Length: 346
Image 1 (cartoon, one colour):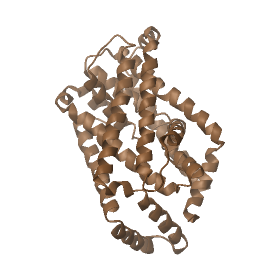
Image 2 (image 1 turned 180 degrees about the horizontal axis):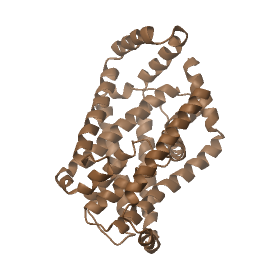
Image 3 (image 1 turned 180 degrees about the vertical axis):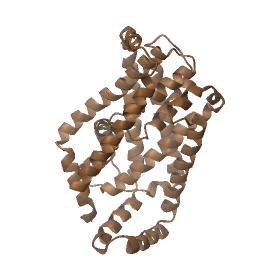
């Protein structure tokens, strides 16, 4: 437990340092007074349809998770929706995307779905999300040459290079998961061999048990129809989220195309895979401002819009997730204890 706490503390402070660097990159050269003027002058009525569209995207996420879990257990979408909201809340206030573990633990409490199987489906979700984000970038590939400002924000690398690296990472991960899902017996044998050679004997049975339940969570990838449904749903989810970007844009005195906002959405969400402080502070804001500035939006306006968008994405889902978590009566320390006990359960 002490080692776990130390590791989390190390991850937390690393995230804080990275967020500070990204915030510096986002705010350098800006006059904060001008940014604040844009925030004050915004027409906040546009946030209402934006938030509604966003919650529709969260409902679609709940349906997608329900679909991925069907081979293990059919859980209604209405049951999944509060659990997904709790996961968002956890990701927004805890480091290292701990909300993913939290929602797996909550689902186990409610529906007796093994945590390791749930985590397998959650990883599949994230891989498909990454693939769609890359698709949003490649749809705008012809425009990427204009985004020279973005090169400075993301580690002196061009967005084209980031797209290529992301394609290799997410594409490679998806391929591995497909192979494991299609050939579960062979995958199980490989895991057994590796466990026998690398895992101490006292932990071996637990590791193998978790691995088997994890493999069970990949069953949906064995069906081409299921894979297509998950992919199409992922596209719908991210188009709906881009719809929120579009509605919030109307609160500010600028206009770019929906495709530009798709590009912004893709770049921003790829950047938020970088470890950061809870709530993706900095890693969301710096790339968002850079993309809009590259399209000719005044930086003060771009910063004000990105700040308001970030808050509008963070506050409603975090509040709703906290409400659902309070109803469940589960604390994060309890979730950790249940996760540690997962390997010993049948």
